[in-house]
Length: 445
Image 1 (cartoon, rainbow, N blue to C red):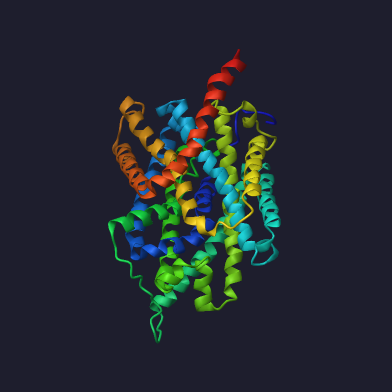
Image 2 (image 1 turned 90 degrees about the vertical axis):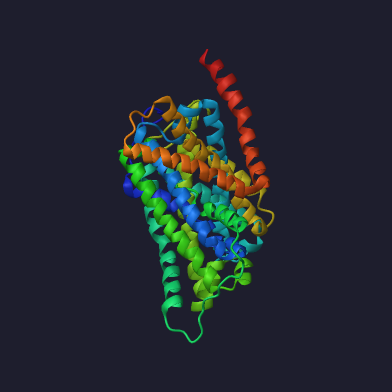
């Protein structure tokens, strides 16, 4: 197995794949989402309904593709089969870049919450950057031990990160239904409007990014034709339920203006009802949540890099596996890139840019959703999906509705965010041209 690119061990079962979806999706961003949604008030309610339905359609697309092509190694293979190698490369390149950025942001977010216990990290930017880099490399060390080791870390971190969500729901139920002298409910005053719903639903999608996580390491999944669809649906619906509950409860219990200005909405919620000491307890769970997310996205990033190498977009050396079946070189290269980002962006605070970062990362992820939905329609037109029964017909309808949903999100993102997302997309064109068109044919001769 050492130094091989031939066959990857299939070690991810239903539990680990579901943990990937839930663990990768529920991260540090969810703990900031109530503040981002606060200016839109009750527009968040229909926005969450639209986002949940849209993400179910997107999940249906990935589940159907995994069932139709169980031997394929994920979205790169699906989009390449339908759209060609060049388009598939650009789509997945955007996703790859956004995942590198996400890992750097996750490490930074975890260090921010660590400053609750180590105050020096809040003032010493170099120490904070070095700590964030150490976290990135810690999860590289875990993932090079093999996909099963990373999978179990993901399972346990996902269990731990769901505990504070249960606590938030319990607090909400107590506030809503227990007898009080004065009702604690604080209804937002912003009127419901179409523009407010569109903007809020775009922000809500950021909390749902990761529904595709079970499909990304398809080459490592046991019985992918059954496991990936089940994990994708279970994970997506779980994340949607948790996200709706924990984002709407602060909105109804904290005054709208106060919530919009909050840098730690859940800490403020706990402090409001349980006292200031509860803030540190919540910070500990946020750290666990961020670490679990960082572990899962490290695994996805390594597998995605191997997929690039296998399809000819990256050098074959990045697809080499170690004795544990893990792509050590892929992990190292992506960790170096994340570390460079951490070193170059550690000089100031990014609190004011959080919402904009949400939109840019969402825009960078959108091509893979749109591309895979379009791939289903193209493959159906070519007759490559075989005879369509009732299940396949529903899948085809879901692909159409997922495409419509992607257009809806694009409108909500606005021109500025879409233009920023085009930057990594444009960077991928010369990379593909150099390696796939110039370098690879030269090496073959």
